[in-house]
Length: 202
Ligand code: MN
Image (cartoon, rainbow, N blue to C red; front, side, top):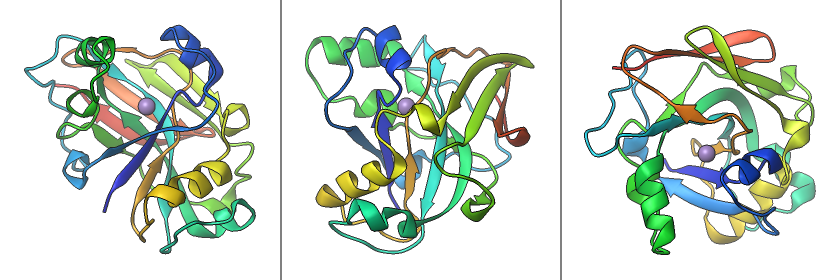
């Protein structure tokens, strides 16, 4: 299983990190070892002093595909949830300044947190709202309608480079409002109005 992630897919978030609107999806991968196990806290890693939450819609790939046509791309996802792409922002900034790859800032152990799956058939994929609270205060909210690249476009684009396999995960980018987490924080992720993710920080 691999985790395909998209950076800068909401304009306001790209701008808050000082980037222009991308003309093509910005993709990166996390290994399966980055998936945080359910019911375990997220432990702050010792190599960063600035770990950020990034709440994102996450889709589960339900069948294998390569060079998928955008028109048929939604046949390749069957479930959705809210996830957190934990990011060591200080490390990422340092690496970006040198033009180096981001992996150690983005793909470290436990950096991919996902909530409970819900069948996509319950929702309109082009109008899916989600939000994140930190210590019960709203910090991020987004809607798939505001993505720069739609889920279909992301699947089509990613499958040109990476063979998609059943069970792979697609993190679709975070809206504005990213920020740091601290020990004993509690994060809750909501899909529409339903809480599907709880994550304690230690
Ligand atoms: Mn992200």
